[in-house]
Image 1 (cartoon, rainbow, N blue to C red):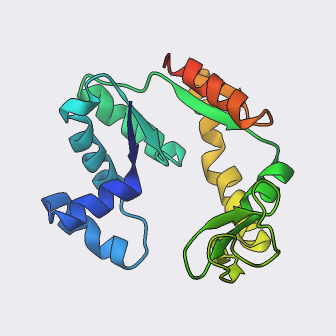
Image 2: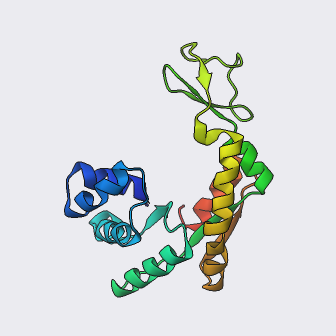
Length: 190
């Protein structure tokens, strides 16, 4: 199944200098959100490609009720629709721990997690011995703000898709293998 993220769509359209890419570039370069109508147009263009004929997995979009309704309307006009929305449910305190536990190597870029994949020596990369640092967006205070935005803007999508019979809830407190198995079963991947 094709995996589609809006960030990759933007980067590729900008790199190829497509018409939509040219329109999105000023927003992207300023670090602003690309307007929904441009994002949806890029998604529809991508969904029309042959590798999406059997379906795809959207990642990171929609993030708001407005985006979800606009996407549903656009897909309906194209004779398409979202048939399943996967929601990996994890308690807020666990999300905070998982999201704020990541550390990166300044030299080689290796990624560690203080709970799930700690380095052998605290603060040092196992691969090259480089210094480990935490990105600003992985710091607990930043993660808390990101979670606040999520609960305000994105969490309402859970009820939106549940009411439409499209939500599949996955228990994210299980092992990685169990979660992966449930995800694959939810999208009918053998």
